[in-house]
Structures are given as C-alpha cells and as structure tokens.
Image (cartoon, rainbow over all chains, first blue to last red; front, side, top):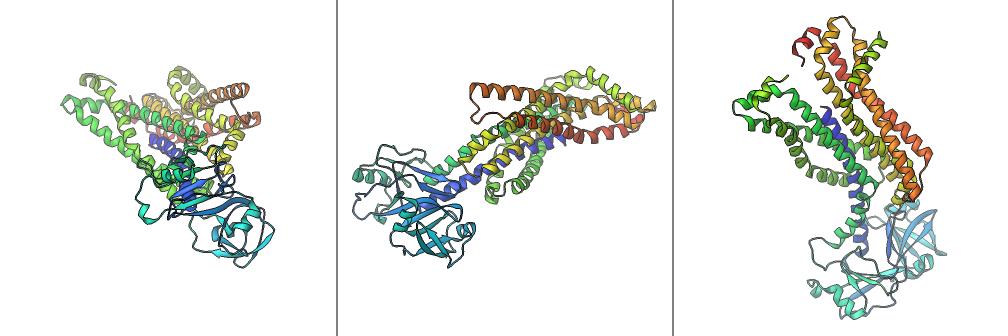
Length: 352
Length: 188
C-alpha cells in the first residue's frame, strides 16, 4: 500500500519530466517540419538558425547565400525568416517572393496571440499590411508571411533556402551531396551540426543519410535531450531510484512478515512458487503505482504547466515510463525472495 | 499522559536508532534536492530559458523536487509500519495495562517525526554546503541565493514532518485501536 504510493510518486515525477521532454520533441518536429515542408534540402546561412521560444519558431541568424547553382530541374525557394515585435509580442516573419506586398498571412494561433483579426491593419517594417487569416495553417506554422521586400525591411536580410528536387530524383539518397557539389557548400544529415561561421552556409539533407531515424526525429531528439539532460532529468532519475529503494525495502518487510507461510511452502517443495507469488505481487504493486502515478502526472502538468504539456506528449511519456516497469517489478521481487530462499525451511518455520 | 507517551516514544526511538537510518537517508536525498533547487533557482531558470517557457520549467522543477521529497518520506511511513508490526505484542501489553490510545499513538509517532526531521536537516545541511562549495568554485552559473536556500530548508522540513505524520497516523491509529488480546496473541 505505502510502497505503491512511493513508487507512484516516483513515477509521477518521471512522467512529468518525460511529458515536458516529449512536448518539446513534438515542438521540435513540428517547427522543422513546418519550415522544410515539402522540400528535401534546407540551406541555412553561415550564422545558423535558432529556435526562438518566444516566437515559437525557427529564425535565421544571418543572410542566406546570395544564389544557389542548382542542378537541372531542381527548384529553390528563398525565404526571409527573422523576428520582430508586433503589438509588444515577439513574432517570426517569413518573406516570400510572390506574396502580395500589401497583405500579411497570419495563422489563427498567431493572430490570437497578437490580438489581430481578419482585415485588421498590421504595421510591419514601416508598411501597413492587411491581415489575412490562415484558418487551416499547420500546427508548426507560427509566423506571419508577407512579401520578401516587406519582410526584409522588417527583420533585416536574414533567411534560408529550401530546395525541392524533381520527382525523378526523389529516390536518391545523396541529394545533399549532389547540391553540395554544384554549390560548393558543405552538407550534413545531422541537425546537431551547426554551420561553420566562416563559411557560406550549410545544406541540411532532410531525406538522405543512413539510419532508421528521419531528420525531423533527430531534430526533435535535440529538443527533448535538452530537457532530460537538464536538472529536471537528473532530479526525476533520483526520484525513481528512491522509489525503487522503497519498493525493495517494503517487499523485504512483507517477506519477513510472511516467513512462516513461505517456510511451509518451501518445506513441501514449493520453493519456486514463492517466487511466482512475489512476482505477481510486485507486478500488481508496480502496475497500480503506474496508473496512479501517470494519472497524477496528468493532473500535475495540467495544473502547473498547461502551456507546455499536450495530451499527446503525456500519452507518449506514460508509454515511455511503462517500458521500464517490468524490469523494476522483476528485480524488486527477486531481491527479497532471493534472500528468503537462501534460508532453510526449518529456519523459516522456527523463527518468530 | 501525552507527556509520558512522548517520553516513552523517545526512549524506544533511541533504542531503535539503527532502524531510522534508511528512512532518514531517503528523506535527506529528497530534502537535498529541494534545497539545491530553491538555492539555484536562478541558474535553473537561466538554463531553461533557451528552451522557452522558463517560468513553467522553473515551476516544474520545484514540483518534481517536492515530489521526490515525498517519495523519500514514504520510506519513513514504510519504516513506521515495520516498527508497528515488530512491536505488536508491546502495544498489546500497553493496551492491556490500561494505557489509552492517545499516548500510544503519540509514542509511535515520535519515531517517524524524528526520522523525518533528521533526514530533512541532514539533507538541508549537505545541500547548503554543496551549494556554497559550488558557488565558491564558480560551478553555479547564476550564483546561489541564501534566501532561496532558507526557503528550501523551511519547505523541506515542513513538508517532511507533515507528510511523515500524514502517512504514519493511519497505521499507528489502527495498531493502537486493536483489542490488546489480539495484539498479545498474534504479534511477533
């Protein structure tokens, strides 16, 4: 009963941390997905790109390479991507050629944050733009889109290129290398690599590379890793270890209380069954603790950090925590029973 | 009468000091984290800022540290139930000689309170020393706030005592309410 409470609390703390890290992972996947969209290659400036938590979007830190020498049939899209302040809030601004200079396309989530609605006038970089609400924007679209000129005036000459290859080349695994050869820029499939500040930029190949993980997954792992390796991750791990200590110590107490019962069982040759008893018992304790802990964590994140946690992240975290429960339950049962079975049945019966 | 219960509890706690080591250590681990988190709140906030939502992360860190402290305190309650099952016959004797429930419960609650306080104080002391050392060698990026540490010590001591009492009252109350004849015949 008490050990269940202890483990439940430990599981609660781990689940909260995992929820936070999972929601950051989702944010990471969404932001990079929204930026790269249908393109295969992402050419970032030498100064790199950073995630701005206030704007909730990726922004470029420098000017993109002036032009790209593309292989035949490939298309490149130059996006101005920076951030500015609108109505006192930091917001990312994307500039694309071909967007009407008088309008600002604003996703509804951003519109809500900035307090603007369809048809309002938005002052950006000295020009007054008419807000056009994007109702069906993707979850990762967290920026205002306007024409390249207006955006450059508002946020400066910062941005990146996205390169789309023709369908015939889609099956190739070395798109980054092909573009690297024609442009002279370095290429990588690892989002953890930053561009060389002295160079001209870097090509992120989002489809190529070996390994089972996609570029988005690796990118989101970067985000969640920052949470699990921070103070949060450390504290929750200590909590889990403490919970395990409590589980073992209370199982030891339970075994001690029932020595005579187990003495009878092992004296008639049922020593192994004692082990099964405890496996089932500790299984029940851990499963109950998991249910209580996960529900408690859900309530805790909803109350304390509603801005970060999403239900999806919570479910992911619960599943992740469930993954190491069996190991804990088995070890938690084996330790006390092992000690018990080392004694002879007579000793168990005679004690007390 | 409660005074005698208290004295009896203190005496038996001294006799069983070895039993208090594990619960005190688990509580100390939790208290250590709480005090460190409170003392270095500024640094944690700073490192969380790169991820955004710095305030929420700061709140989550406090929440998790307090949860870990509670995990540590649960071991105190586990130790209390163990104590009670060891001392069932003794409780039967007390009941049979006419000692009322109040003093018996008081005597039994001395042990969890002492181990909770000892754990919280030990953890806090270690945490303050570690924070100061980290600060002195420059490992604590945003410095250590003594006010925060004091708040952390207060929180950990109060939470430990509160949680230890809350989780121990029920089993001790139940044990003290059992008919003496049953405690005497079944207890170990």
